[in-house]
Structure formats: C-alpha cells, structure tokens
Length: 120
Length: 120
Image (cartoon, rainbow over all chains, first blue to last red; front, top):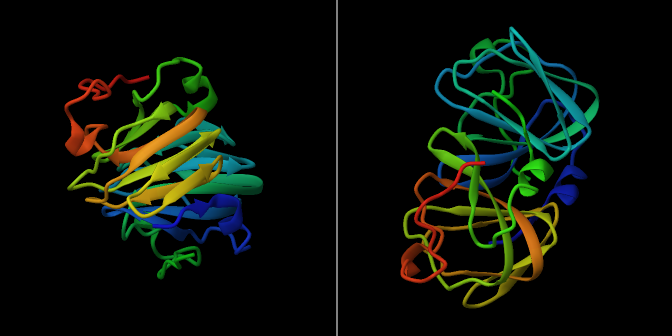
C-alpha cells in the first residue's frame, strides 16, 4: 500500500507506445505510457479505455473527428470505437483499462503490439 | 465522446466530501472531489478505491500508518482496509472506483454519506 508518484515512474523509462502497469484496482490497471508519433488504427471490442494526459499533448483521432488532449484532460474511448492516438512531441499519459487489454486491440499484428506488460 | 478538463470541472463546485461523476469506463466511475478537514474511518469490503491528488495535499490514514499524497501522486486502497482521508487545506482529488460505491463504505450512517452521486 505505497503511493505512486507519477513523475518518479515516468523517469524510469523512455520507450514509446509501451504502457507500464503502475497500479491495480480490482481487475483494472493504471498504466503509464510515453507516446510520440503515430499509433495504429484499432478498437477494443469489449472494453472502454481512458487516456489522461499528464505532460504534453496528444491527439486521439476517430473516423469522424480528432480530440486533442492537454495535461489535466482525459477522454474515455468507448468499446468498439476505432481510434488512433498520435503525439507530435513526446507526451506522457496515464491509461485506465481492464487487465489484459492488448494495446493494439483488433490490430494486434504489428510491431507496436505489446505482448508482455511490464510493472514499474 | 467529449474530453474532460479537470480544472473546468473542479470550478463547477465548492462542496467538500461529495464526489461528482466526471466519466465512466465500463462499470467504473471517474469521480472528482474536494476534500477539507476530516472524513470518517471506513472501508469498502468488495472494492478497491483509487485516490489521485490533482491539487493540494491529502492524507490517507490507516490504522498503522498515514500516507500523504501530493499533486501527481496516487494510492490504491485495497478492499477491506480501513482508512480515513484528511486534508488540512482544501485538496482536489480524482477517484476511481466501481459504480455504486458509497463514499462512507461500512460507516454509511453519518452526515457525510452521499446517497445520490451528481454527474458534472
């Protein structure tokens, strides 16, 4: 039952698009991720996904619009909705999603797919 | 599918110990709350609870220790563990917990118990 300091945890890694588990709540995980550049279009058929920006700016593109998130803003992407995260410059974000979610969702074939999720 | 700006939402209310729902993810809710002073000792037998400080400082007292949270820090209180939040000065925090959780848990008798949760 230790507190988690986000800045301390973000200082532990530099890789992009590879969420790390920083906490667990029931069957859900609090993950930290650094984003830069383009991710792939994907959706998660069974789970909602929350993006909250801690530092920097990110876009979440949908087929019909793009939502830009700054630090202190969050967005819940509903299950089944195609989306593509993007960050022009490095962005630190917190994710909240059910344990076992694959980062690339239904597009789980590419180089960006994370098969094993590290804990920090 | 609109983004939530935490500062904008916190500007909408002034009451203490009365979490407002700012987002939903599957069966879980993202709540915003302002804390000041002392809460009651309580526990939630079936659900974990996450406290993340957005602005200010709060304490989470346990029977054997106290954890102090500053902005950018979070703590998950495991199910069944007695705790008592406290804030010397007003503190803004984000909560993450399963829908339907009563704020005062097993101590659901007092004035601080919130029977209806407002959405903002």
